[in-house]
Length: 74
Image (cartoon, rainbow, N blue to C red):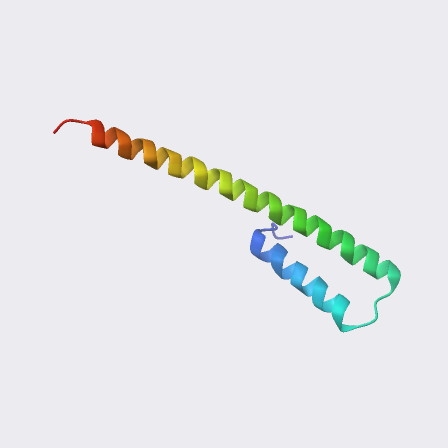
């Protein structure tokens, strides 16, 4: 089984939405689809939060490097 990533999760969420919108869905199936969509949404939120933190750390490091470079005498 392939590892889940953000793009795959979004695609699966879209497929679930299309499935639910396109036909009458059995209640049991609907419950399972909603549970899966909830898991995928949480996964995506965590991925976005993690990416934001990583980007913030990278930009802070870049900013500190830039400040250090500006302080060095020529």
